[in-house]
Image 1 (cartoon, rainbow, N blue to C red):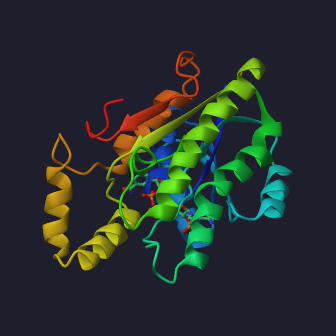
Image 2 (cartoon, rainbow, N blue to C red):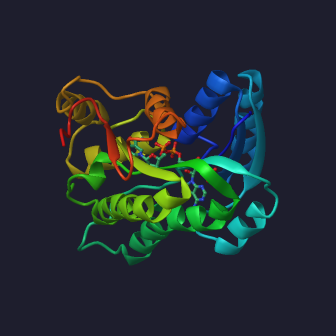
Length: 250
Ligand SMILES: NC(=O)c1ccc[n+]([C@@H]2O[C@H](COP(=O)([O-])OP(=O)(O)OC[C@H]3O[C@@H](n4cnc5c(N)ncnc54)[C@H](OP(=O)(O)O)[C@@H]3O)[C@@H](O)[C@H]2O)c1
């Protein structure tokens, strides 16, 4: 049976790579959410070329009414990946209250909103993966909002895992390290500027701090997420899979 898998943030980056991986691997039907209609349409085309099918919905994960409306269009879901997210610096003594609120609303409440809206469509055997970060494992100066959201997401994954396991729904999280996407590009620019380095200097420093000495491609993260989405995975429950080249070892 063709699996139907919803991906928030399916328009770009890691979410898009997950969609293409699942299209190639199992000709999955993808339900892709994002705010950019053009990027969603482009990903849907690529999904078709990779052997899958896709429905796209312009939806902001902070808007619960819109998510409920989208859920009304769906019959059944076998998997859900909460990949939509934003990042950026929120120094505690900067003028950043609004951005702090936006990051928490998108990166922590967003996955909550998404799971709540689409859970009624998910039967026993369903798989949910929340995309956290290594910044859900440790702190980075200037990234209070993002670290708080990503740490919080791990707590959410643990609680939901126990709440839903009796329904046969398996919930886990992943914690990627640096992944070459727009988000990483912006992060490098911001940290390089804040630490008075060139972007090349900061990137070299960041790569040197990873035991495997490199950033990752979105496809590599998709591979890990697909493993957690696999119905064969019945052992990983409420866990966080580190996808970071050895940075975090617990
Ligand atoms: N790149 C990294 O180094 C890295 C490392 C660890 C964790 N992560 C996490 O991985 C996830 C994906 O990030 P990425 O690197 O792929 O970043 P990206 O290339 O910037 O993609 C972010 C995705 O999230 C969507 N999105 C953002 N805000 C949204 C909102 N309010 N409602 C709906 N969709 C929204 C974007 O779609 P639209 O623009 O179409 O809305 C886009 O599809 C994020 O949760 C991020 O925190 C990334």
